[in-house]
Length: 303
Image (cartoon, rainbow, N blue to C red; front, side, top):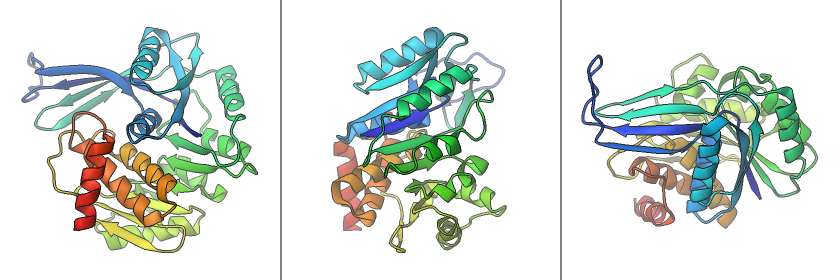
């Protein structure tokens, strides 16, 4: 079983308009409310690709109820812990000529709720996969990623971490199966700017030396690189297409990689599946479907 954890989920209010005029009344051409959060995104794309997972996290207030309803409607199994106070945040995503986001602040996570999450994770067994993705609320200890991974030592599970800064660096010693920084986040870790794939590979190998098994670096329009657990380096550009929505494309890449690895056991094929799924999401209003992903995957192989 794959478990995804989203500490600070959200209802995403997505608005599309021709142009955002600051200080004026703007009328939306399209609007939608959907479940959001990096771990949730991974679960939703995994479902589209034919792999079951369970989304874990915290939900509060009427927005939390709507979050759970949205996940149920989309056929995504979830077991979120209900918080007594506050409300699940709302993130506003405005898509015009440029993408603008306003992210809300999540509810306070009590110590009792954190203990409840740790107890949920006790169900994990050999062969399971745990995905820890995204930021953590200010009310949670900064060491929560490390504590969770430490609690799972000895179970022979694969851990995926999609986080930034110290959250990521603190867990490398536990040899996570996969980490996925983008090129800016990778540069920030080493206080430099990543300008090309060669530099991404160089610093990706440094993270591998620090403990990571597979380092997948997304580079926006320049594609991605993978430094895999066998010591091989894989590079790819992106398939041809028009970017409609870049939100969640990185999470889709993680889901695609996992789906590809589970189906083939091959890092290179998993890498290409990740590229295809991430691109398919970016080229669509919705998350990547299996059909869209396989079409782009064929294009990648042909190239």
